Amino acid sequence: MKAQKLTKLALLTTLALIIFIVELRIPDLIPIPGVKLGLANIVTVFAVYHYKAGEAAMIVFSRILLGAFFSGNMMTILYSAAGVSLCLAGMLFLKKIISGGLRPVKHLWLCSVLGAVLHNTGQIIAACFIAGTGVIAYFPFLFVSGCIAGSFTGLCAQYVINRLELETGNNRDIWYEEKI
Amino acid sequence: MKYGKRLYAFCGLILLSGIAGSVMVMGKPKTDNVSIVRDGEVLYELDLAKEEDRMIEIEYEGNRNIVEIKDHQIRVSDAGCPDKCCAKMGWLNSSVPIVCLPNHLVIRYSDRNDESTIDAEAY
Image (cartoon, rainbow over all chains, first blue to last red; front, side, top):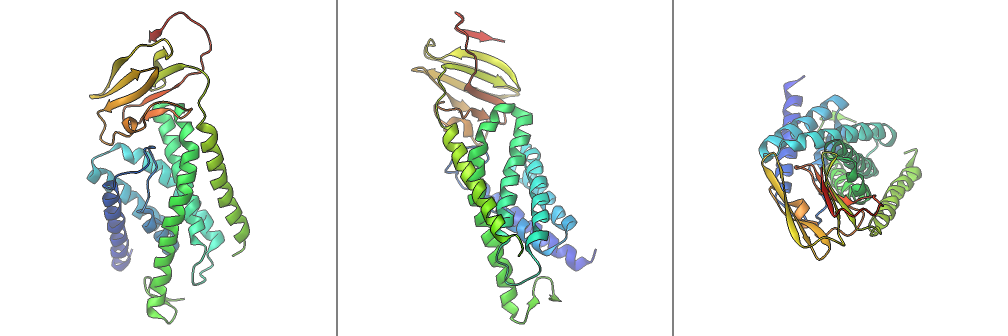
């Protein structure tokens, strides 16, 4: 892998990690376990759009591992890994359907909503294995919060992607440095 | 974008089913029997109508949960886990269980229907 691409992937991982750690400090309004504004997934959606599946997976799994170390809570690896695997699979599948390389990107946030819902589903499945099947009752709340949070992060990622294109103005993808 | 309207409809469907499910789950079940379950095995089965006020302390790998029963209601009043999500959930009043994930603890209304004369059982 070229050094330039590796550096860019590492930068994205750092960004996701910082957002993740800062977000842990925000006091949560809703006491349901698992409801959170997954802002670090902005970087995940961005990576899914710009990079191949393996590279996006590298960013995400590094972020989970390092985030668990830095936040001091190793159990989150289990839940996050389950959620993120489903989320990545869903988003990559949907990306083939949605994007055709057309700019400006308008419908990427739907991809993110599905990703967020799948993420919560994966976390509930992991929680079922760990704490017993009573946890299924949280499922409806996580659907709703997944839709809302997923659309928010998807819109953020979409604006970032569109803005990065507008900076140059002559249809060059400033992140990827290739002509479209 | 080929599947545009179908995708919007699908997301709308997810949101609506989530809202409908939340409303359904929030109803209070008719029984007064409560189980405290840990790792799938039932620790306590309590009948809330007959219980008096007390505190139960449950230990798990160094962390403890203090379960408080007061006025025929049950809740987790303190926990050793860092985020204390279980304590913030308040009194148990719907099908939604009170869960402490780090301690693998679940408190919920149980499905037991029999009229036994035993007030509480510890397994």
